[in-house]
Amino acid sequence: MTKSEKSDIVGRHGANAKDSGSTAVQIALMTKRMETLSEHLKKHKYDHSSRRGLLMIVGRRRSYLRYLQGNDPEAFKKLNSALGLG
Image (cartoon, rainbow, N blue to C red; front, top):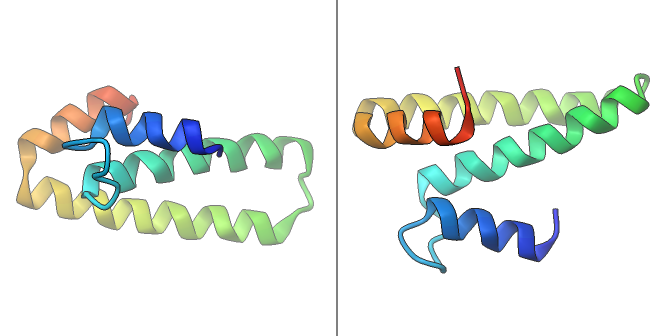
């Protein structure tokens, strides 16, 4: 992920341009990383270390989503629709 892609994601999902630590921004960044790793794994199906990394990111994002859903349901719904999650 390039710096411009990251700053674009932070700008769209953060409270301001420097808000890179909020839960919504972290979830959006993990989603982008998961998409990148999924594309990589389509080409390199025997890359088990990248697959493990992807599974770790999936678990971490699931935890963040659960946290956001419990503490700020409106932000959870907004993020779900913005990212196209379930």
